[in-house]
Length: 391
Image (cartoon, rainbow, N blue to C red):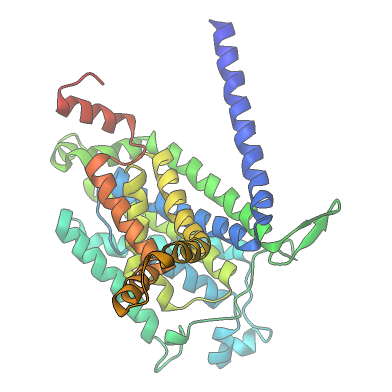
């Protein structure tokens, strides 16, 4: 028995080391195809953090939130205000106290972003404690739009967010005074700023995954699952559903606040356009596609929906040109033939085709795998039980 345990443990550690090596080498392999591919990996990790946070609210607690991107905006704008010259340029008293401008370290601001976003999560959760389903979705959708509209209009009479023009000149990621947005040479190997950003994002994403795994198996996580399955039964068993709901909103929002701060540091610019309703829908689709409540499934869904559309943006134009050149001889030179070719060109535009594939994929998943690509073991058991089969 001990030998079997040792073999299993050795196999697990070997797998972990191989995965760690792959994650470390991944940006270097992607960099051979261009820096844009490393940038895609960076954004995929940001969306992974968002999806894990939303999974707490939707997957664990069963609370449908369509305004989740608002907490992402709160974290981004808080870091932008505390790590840019915007406030000192618009408020004389701050300019006197900080003549060089507000340039707080992101490692100091990150906890503030998480706490501030959690506070907004509680503010959202308090008035919707008795709402569920469609009603909760509508209220949270309205909350997300209210935050975006506020950010778009808080430039008068006092300029706080600079309105639709957004905030620029935001400080990049720094560790020990080293600017991670610049390339550095270590041991004769040049590491780009995008690669350094990838490693920072990867470390924080792994930390969030660890926290989610610990929460899932904790007393709080089991209370969330009980709330998701049957709120009345959970209340009858002595669970304080009010506090558990608020905790779910706060924890999910805190992860979004962290991701928002990292987004602002990475981009160097934030504006209300980055926090539209479509972003909330995309993050929710990541959770649903991978498997609600199952952390590995959510990770899979987030990486697929974040990386594949950007990959299509790069691969589709040359493939479209080859396809048009191939099928053009089949059509004549008439107006109708040219109209068909123009339709094919418009259909294969990256933005149009990406939306088409996104919609078809979601419809297919809902029809063929309603529990997601990688559902939790409990979800698989429920599917088999409903069908009268053995799991």
